Image 1 (cartoon, one colour):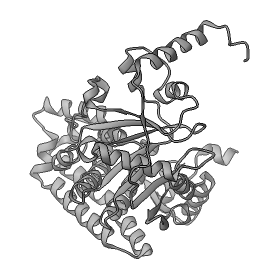
Image 2: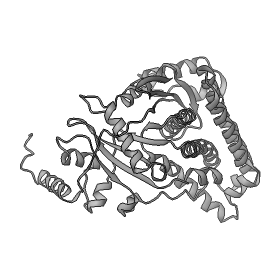
Image 3: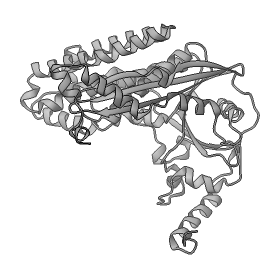
Image 4: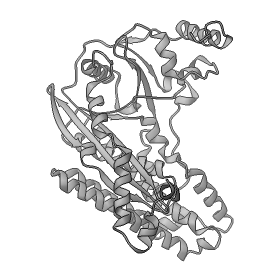
Length: 421
């Protein structure tokens, strides 16, 4: 095909695949064991419109349940987007994704409190743990190191002024209020109000830092960015901690399923330097196979599967970090439900999902699999319900700009190229 059949490149790939077939253990078989009586599927979406001094984001979360084999509608997704302006203007994609993820976690907690057996998120549990090491991590580490030369410790300022405690208390109150609210319109108002308050909390952090003279040694813009990122990261990680605690208390199962993944755990396991990711490798190894799975966890003794170390810099409050990383051990499961379907990746906290429960979850996924695509139908449904079109947020951002004035109008103004084009 395309003249590639005889290339050395293709031969190298074939050798890797043949080695994987020889050395990988025989996969487990997904049997018709006990299917879960209740499961809740959650997916989110976001789109951002870049402006002169901000990002305008539209966020959505869709959910639905399968309870006693009947579909139960949850959040409406893109039919009810939540608009949020991201200021200051930095890392728009990362921040929008984090806030969208926070909304997903709220819905997960709400489901667990209704005694749902399993909550299935689109995405990766490992990515959730690694969110503490986002783009600003290195900047915060450098900031902390620079301030230590002046005997200033960021964490001590936040704790000494009780700023972090105040933020934690407000976040906890928001979570409780949101999780108890049954009426959809009120739930969205609660979420919108808290997102607006992020900037009030960021202002309190910034004010505390300035009062301690931190702005004499570092750029003010970095302090503003840090203050905002701290509140947003604290929200996500605190919600993750609450979700995992709720799962533990209710003996429930939280799992994350990724449609796409670039993970290379198998390259680590096979000790090969391969540009092939795990799912591509398994697509070949499991060709024409169905209802199979492979479990990778800490017992595999791979460096890449070691527990995630809690961040050592103040990306969030110390209390939040300690609780979010209680379940730092994670398990990776690759599974394929039908002959012509994709290889999917499932991840979850190792200490919350026993092997027999995993088999029940896989049996449930298999029962829900679409015959043609091999993808679990509920996950496909929430994905399409959540999807936000870029054109929508662009129109909303323009309307916000047209109806604003003063400084707000300036930061919402379109980019110059939009006027030109």
